[in-house]
Image (cartoon, rainbow, N blue to C red; front, top):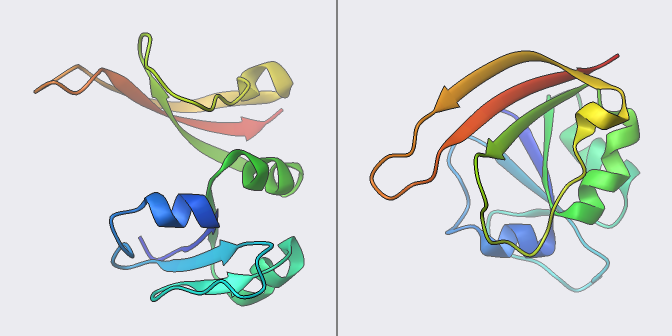
Length: 123
């Protein structure tokens, strides 16, 4: 809550709608694209300029993560426990010089798989 979320167009379009209490900065190559509730940027610098001095959360997709990861100092990661179908996977940041400083476990419940929230920082 309260941060500027930076995301790709497909991630924005996958949301049920703009999420309350957050700014939605959408990074896209499409110069004509626009959507209600979205602030549009066409490169990393423009997205960060839109965020101004507000804290930034990069929420996806894979290309956007790769673009911003070199400048990141913290990862708030949701990790699914067990095998989950999906079309995109992120390499484990712990194998790339990040270490865990926080963990919150959540059991499977009401048809939802088990998951954990991890906080990672660079070594």
